[in-house]
Length: 345
Image (cartoon, rainbow, N blue to C red; front, side, top):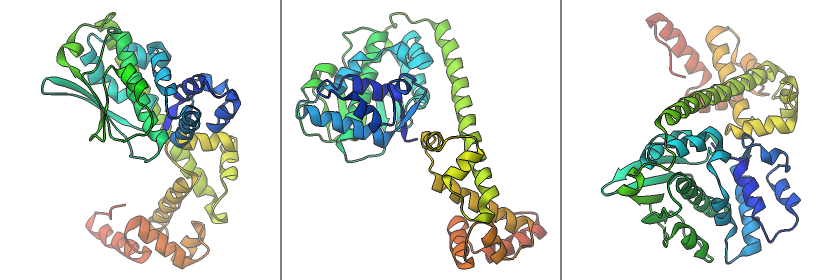
């Protein structure tokens, strides 16, 4: 899931104090000041990294904008997610449940919370991308976590250890000031470590009743989001399949048939971690397997119906999809029909 909420991009732009033309920064992530105000809108992580690097260039080597951004974050800006963390009975309760809901605003990284000996560890795993924008976004993710935890407990909260996978050039003074300790770089994971007494003290406004209500609401939001993701993906695949007999359709044709503008269509694909090409490939595979399974069409006819100009190209693609040639796949289907089983797809 390679997208993040606009809240991160908008806040970084607000704290790009040495760049006067903020319009160019909004353009960089495909937003306007109006769309950036909606936390439900998502930004491709590549564009977010581009944004971080452009702002960093204006401040290098003393990078401070992303820590200023972290310090400005507030729980209520994250909706039910932030309010759930704020109402958790203890920080441990918050960490142990809230990690699964981060995907509602960050589909780049996965998080985990666990006790390690006499410390409690909040860790993050994300694809390792060797670029400054990725490094800064990791630092900002951990910095934001700490800010929200301070709002939940006390402004004096300090982790006993902070670590990052990456190595980084430039000053880290802003990191030291924000975290209250010197981070370790080149570590095995990105993580915040707390003493157990820090995570087990009651939260300032912790309320078990409100906490349980919000967790239930977040569960519903997560389920709805997953259903919407699958529904949109299925609809796109079905629409592409309808058009394949006329050749591989253009993105504009599919988006028009679905009642969406091209830019909106692309954004919704990106938000779900898909490309038009990947879903076109999925549509061709699904239709090819269906036609082989339930029709008597020749392989050359099936190649045409799935948008291939030559049977040889279809055969190569089908073997890549299924691990078998079309002939072997149909043969296995006939044999499995006699035994009551079917080949894996």
